[in-house]
Amino acid sequence: MTTMIPYGRQDISDIDIQAVVDVLRSDYLTQGPAVPAFEKSVADYCGTQHSVAVNSATSVLHIACLALDVGPGDLVWTTPITFVASANCALYCGASIDFVDIDQRTYNMSVERLAEKLAYAEKIGNLPKVVIPVHLCGQPCDMVGIQVLSQQYGFKIIEDASHAIGGKYRGEPIGNGRYSDITVFSFHPVKIITTGEGGMAMTNDAQLAKRMQLLRSHGITRDVTEMTHAPDGPWYYQQIDLGYNYRMTDLQAALGLSQMQRLDEFVAKRHIIAKRYDQLLAGLPVITPWQHADSYSGLHLYVIRLQLEKIGNTHRQVFEGMHEAGIGVNLHYIPVYRQPYYEGLGFKVGHCPEAEQYYAEAISLPMYPGLTEMQQDKVIKALCQATAK
Ligand SMILES: *Cc1c(COP(=O)(O)O)cnc(C)c1O
Image 1: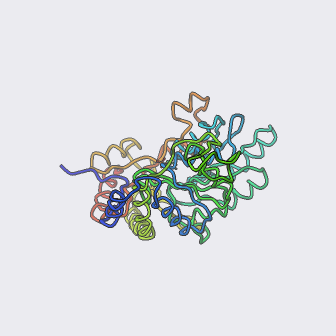
Image 2 (image 1 turned 90 degrees about the vertical axis):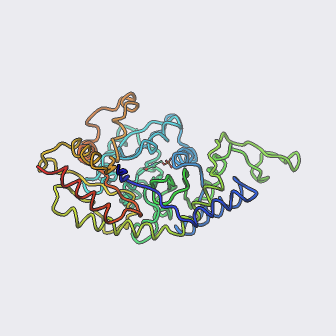
């Protein structure tokens, strides 16, 4: 039996393993030195002043919204073509969520649609407090365009860069905080680097960083300057906010710190694989990913769109054909508002037509640094067969 080629997977070296084993043999499995070392490593890489490591990007999105005072009565906007976590974070805070349709070429949030929606929202007095653009597949959104609108309409920006560590926008690292209040990274095993589970918030705002540090650990402080009154004694701590246990362990941080050494290598490898896909797919009835000249994508995903009018099979049949051939293709993503939970909130088919068209045609091909040329050839062969008339 041949095993399925997955759409994504981690790359773990002996050095990575040793880094985790070293923590296991040390004094601290959590709240030791590895977490701040990992935070510093990512902050230095991105050129950001502050970084807050937590147990997942989902948790980062939650405390990022809280740090920006998102609460009941507030409105948050994101893209429908994302993982559900980019939208759920607003609902955790008791806020409402809405979706801005995508750009035809990048599949990221469309700045034109955003501008239209903002103009209308201003008229009816229903502007968003926070907008969460998502760098789909690792390709950065038009952050300059979104930032201009944020200044005009007064909303805050959280960049969901879960796909995008190691990428660049206008020649600078994604996550440097030039275009947003907070940037979010994910270290789930399918993402660019991994900590098993994990995420990080990047910001240049010391107050936001402090707030997120509190929220990741019960809202508890041991810093005398933050306390409401003088400590009772050296054992003393105060809970000054309602926080969570969203901490990252030192085991995870040690893995992340070790993976950071190979981040550039991982992304370069993804680019080699993407380039080869671009070439091998040139004759097939598919649209390959369009890359903006302003951006260097992290290439978390390689998404093709089927030109269904040129293909005998349906989207679903092509997808199933790939699985039958041992290719673990995936679909990123179902428009979030088409999920039953979101339909329950009142969202209807047709809300974002471009996103729905995308969903009807998109397939994520296997993409990860360890993908061999032989495996890639197998993917192409299977796709040729599945799309043959
Ligand atoms: C993976 C992902 C998340 C959630 O990341 P976790 O670390 O698994 O919580 C959020 N947003 C996007 C766009 C993602 O791809």
